[in-house]
Length: 139
Image (cartoon, rainbow, N blue to C red; front, side):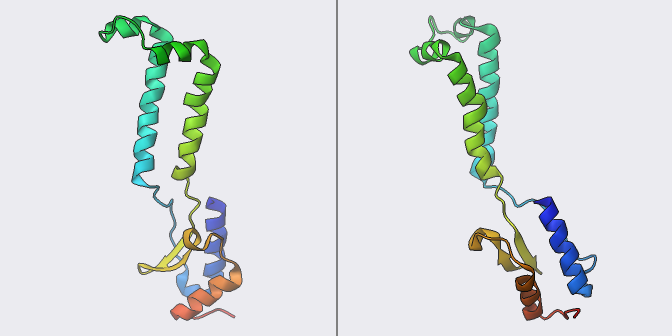
């Protein structure tokens, strides 16, 4: 996406000289719940690593006489458990962290939204958007 931003920035600065040096970009913030869920997943990873190294003894350290049944099931299927915890769950959440957004604002006013439109703007569209905003087009 960084490449798309740089191409659009270069295009806009060539079409609208008054924009030179005034275009900035950055990552669109992901939803707060997705960031919190990624933190929970990180904790889950640490717990999984602790169980890998400490084994069944970890249950007695936390005050349980024997491991729960779900833990025994996970031990019976270690590859599936590790793939789920370290690959599948984080991949599912990552799609919400990476928004793929391309939002264009000018003085706080939203001029184009990839999130709303579901597509990337083309050059003709960008020129029209900025001309309608009142910027002088460099023919």
